[in-house]
Image 1 (cartoon, rainbow, N blue to C red):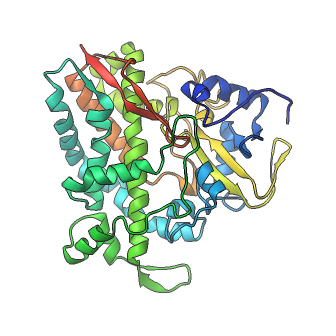
Image 2: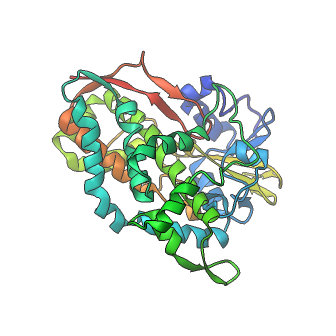
Length: 395
């Protein structure tokens, strides 16, 4: 490793406020970085991150994909497919993937739009509202609970559960219980759906038959279904919800490009991709090192924890020209905002749908706004980067 004084700490609030200068130094001076204070390694270049995320043999997800979770060596219940390696991951992922197909997204788009309209229309006569509280904290929750099969009245409880696991005090590491997943949180919903089937994911998982890793044909246990729903709810509510604050802030800071989107809504899907690259709510993906692995002549030893800094990779000038500029016309090549390889985020099509529809409806009602940063409030987590509040003043 090159001798350098660059320091990266995902729990350091000063760094996290604007991590991109640190990320640039990491890429240039310490592409294989070791933090001795917290005992973890980090990769920041796009090519290295892609390579690492492809390597499921030496870089395992089986102990978790969050730094604190891996280091805590928690007891994972069965079927946490995001924290499994192939072939088990392949089997379990396929059972949930059918809920996020392109066809499914087309079928639910109008419902997503109705949810969005219900959030935004009450704001029409106001000169200011909170983009996170009124939209980001509501829309993803309603959509994922609709897909799963959670009653409207219980949705805020599900949202609080999904987001609570990923929070920490400012500057502190996330506290991780040895039993990281509640094995019974969705038990009542599963029991209810068993007796009252509907067109939702819980019902589908109750009825599906598959061939497990032993070759035996069977149905999922209720514990496995509970785990699947916990994973889907957590990923579908918090990381997507945090992007709404970034949407409001970044577009307010680039009013000329926002005006282009108002004039030509066909540009919105590309703008969403660029927004996700430019300011991601999921900055890191950690792995447990099962055997020595080498990057740039440096050995990351077996038994280590390695994090791939996705947000650094998405600002790598080796992959993206002028990466620190926001450009809705950028032609993106292999952004890693949703990860890469076999663990590419299953809910990426849903996140893109929600963000696109929300921006279409927002611009149709409020073509101009400014953010009130005096009222903005950051959410604190090493694994989800975003906002708890983002008030906007509409013009």
